[in-house]
Every structure is written in structure tokens, then in C-alpha cells.
Length: 254
Ligand code: PEP
Image (cartoon, rainbow, N blue to C red; front, top):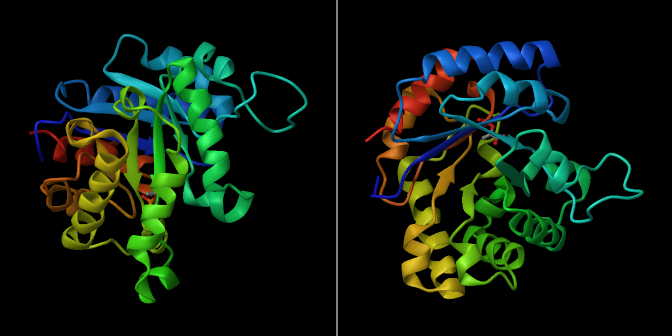
């Protein structure tokens, strides 16, 4: 880990009712309360945001949405606006998660539109990129990552790039129990930092946090987070239980 402040975010996906979300948020707040050198974010479902934000108010936990639309309002059934996230207490938003890309037609272009809206609204975007199993096996990982980073961040100025959090999430490792080895992850993280340097200059790129995501668990987090370009994690399954999420957060402490 470098001098970048690590960030660990829990992506609760389509799990937990409103009551369950509030309970989990309170439990997480209890177990991470002493952590002061890691940014901790939880991303419940849209319906859980308001109650979760109220439950963690005054703690060291921030709240994020799992997506946001680029328009401010209108006939966009099923979508949510930046103002809706902000007024529900969000400071962060996940964009371009592979499940959005895989199941809901998200593309680099739509991620870019969502990203511009998030930046404009002052939300901290967590922009996800990652290759599929067949892309890794066919040796095209670097090409895929390059296209995703440059496509998602197209036209974003360096001051705004500095505010983005990136997440490298190999699709084959998400929810599968398979994890990239720390070396595999570091190789792609270093590439992402290089792509960011090409877009925004080396010193900006050096300040951007890049999370790893893909079956991070308490027993593999320390090794992953010890790599120089890995600045914390985006956690799915293991964030649904307060103790395992807290153990991962603590693994990111310096
Ligand atoms: C994710 O969905 O962002 C994720 C990394 O999931 P998991 O930790 O369950 O692999």
C-alpha cells in the first residue's frame, strides 16, 4: 500500500430489505468504529439508502448508490438521479459494475455519461472495469482494460480524474470464490494507473485510489492490499456480514 488513503466499499447488490439494511449498517458501524485511516463505504439498494444514511450519520461510514442516471429527472423508469442519491445521504456511487454491463446493457459510453453526471453533482464515483474469463484466457486482458478505462473516462479533465476511485474487478472472480492472485491483480492495477497517467498525467494518476474486487475475503485481503497499486477493495459477498467486512476493512489499515 502507498501513501494513498485506502478505501473499502461494500456492494450489497440486490440483498437486504430496508430493515435488514439498517441493522447491517448499525452492526458495521459498531465493528469499524475505531478505524480512522481507511475510507469505509457501504452501498445498499436504493430503497435502503435513506435509512442506512441515518443509521451511520456521525460515524466513519459513508454511503454510496449502486448506479446513477445522467439525466436529472424525467421518464426513465427504474433509474435514479444524482439529486436523489445526494438527498438520500450518498457521497459515492458505483458505476459500470460488471453485473450492469453483463445483464443490463451498460457500455463504456453509458458509464461515461453516468460518470460525468456523478462528477458534476459532487458524488465520488467508483468506476469498475474488468475482463471476462474468456478475455483473460485469450490474452486480451490488457486491451479490454485499456478500452474500458479510456472509454469510461473519455473527456474527463485531470482535476476530475483525481476525484475518481477506480475498481479492478475481473469478472471471473466476482462471486465465484476465485480470486486473482495478488500478482495478477497488481499487474492490472499498474496498467490502470498507466492508463490514468496517459489521460491525466502521472502525478494525478499517482493519487487515484484503485480498488480490487472479486471474492475478497478476510483471509486473502491482507496479501492483496499489500501490493503497491492496490488501494483497498470493492467487496460483494463478504460485505453482507459485518464481521467479515470489518476484517477486510482492518486489513486495509496501514
Ligand atoms: C462485487 O460485486 O463488486 C464483488 C467484488 O463481489 P464479490 O466480492 O462477491 O466477488
